[in-house]
Length: 90
Image (tube, rainbow, N blue to C red; front, side, top):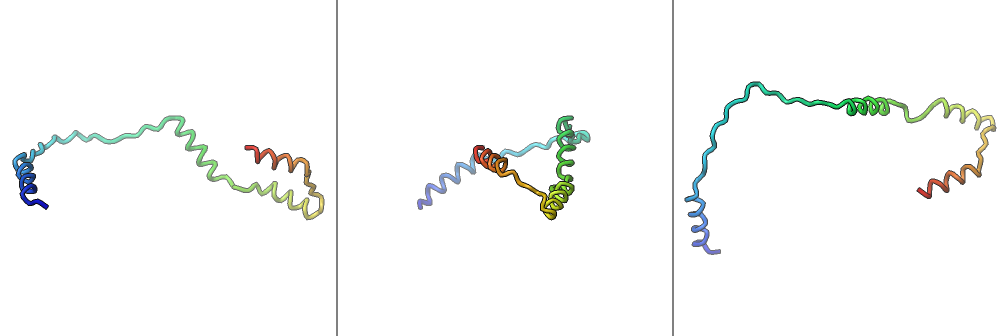
């Protein structure tokens, strides 16, 4: 490491000086504001409703459970295969 070159660099920065900043005037009680569009409000309402909704529809589940218990629940295998095959195409 060459100390002489470091001293030269230091001299350049030392001679450049530091510019002082000026004080700015205070603004007169300016406050930040946020405007929310009607679309965003509608989205928020829909999102909140969706988050509150139950994941499982208990009425349908209980109906199917009763049919299974009674031996009345029948699965249409052709329909099941079609749904499985169509899901794999996506």
